[in-house]
Length: 316
Length: 316
Image (tube, rainbow over all chains, first blue to last red; front, top):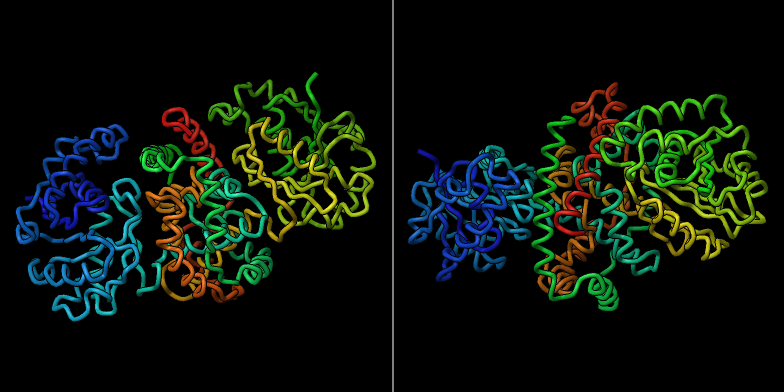
């Protein structure tokens, strides 16, 4: 019999997680305290599955097979019965998570891992004192996880190493790419990297060096192309015939000079934010943000398919 | 008759530029002071063109048509005769460029733009005092420019605005994506953005938060996917139903806290570089760096083709 997983919270993130686990063969029980939320989520899943099958994002399963492995749980206890893993995707409010996690820890099987999708609240803020604290951690996806593979695994100080290892193994088994963090840090890894880039992007616009669209082009028509299949370290490794060492000997001093220029921490002031907002609204009307986000997800799905094709054609 | 362009310097960058201009219909004269360098470059172009045609990267021209628009110039004066634009891709040494640019300014037609491919030397360092200083600027590509469209246009203090405008128009006409900078800044825009990301990447490894491969995965299997077709500003604009303004209200304070944690400028020490080098060499032998860079360029070409397909299928 297939192993069971509980998806607790049936919003955008929980819904996407249920696809990740179900397409990989797990039986997924969805639960949400909001009346009708699970039915709504399953309806949206029904709508999404055919397009995912067409983009070859169901790991060979059909929409019907995938959907057949998902069910609406009658209660939280029902959702948790017999599961090996709980993926919590509740609202990002620590007091909500504290109450919910007491229930999860009390009701889930003693050997199930409890994972939170939170993008920024460390597990220590809502798992302290839980009897099963050692089996709790953060498993933060990049939205939407059924298209983007990365998952950050962030342990609390009391999380058992085995919990991280088991979650990493589960994530690899369902086709995600887990990265384990050694400890809790603010913003985890992904948002620390994003924050560093954004800080400089905001400064370039604030200082009048270039425009908002120009910064976006610098990445989307420039560096972002290679970053979509090799990361920043492999990028510099391949930019010198003698690898990272040669690159750092040649350019380390320049980057240190740059780092000193870039050191100032600047808040994003109202005037600057208004300038960037105006530039974005000139490109995309406020009423079109939601449909543009759907366009982004279609492009992401297409890109992930193209990467898989390139992996086959040219090697990984 | 087609307009003429001179590619001065026939190394990796100059060779790629000659493909950019020739496939778009310009007559390109290549010149290099090193004996045999142009013949070698044209031989490598002959090898590269069929694969570019297959990846639909010749703008509909055949390899023979593209190659037919390139010639080896007999001398610098021959290369410069009748050109509208000179793209200089000489070695990255300011004393080399100073001497060369005196020659370029003296011998090129008075109405030709002189552009340097330099990745880091500001135009003011080698065009000061030239009679034609107003027609000089930096046009820095992301390698290789026949695959990656972005070009940074960086004026010296004496560059005429018209020079930047004409170069931007030329770059758009040949299918590149120019971004004009308002003034010279260290590292220009692309390497300032890359530097900000690298600074945090090096710190995450130095501080033991995660490994080298994990940082690369955080980008290549995470944020880098969307950055390959929307930049950092559009990314955050689509991450809130109320756009950049809503995103900044919600997350600006967190990113300011992060920026304060990230403010310290750190040199890349020998021990840290050795650690990253060791992690990279465990993934890729030193002897395989060159062939891996060729693999990267094939993947880039495939990705650019996939982006064009997605543009047609889902809109830009």
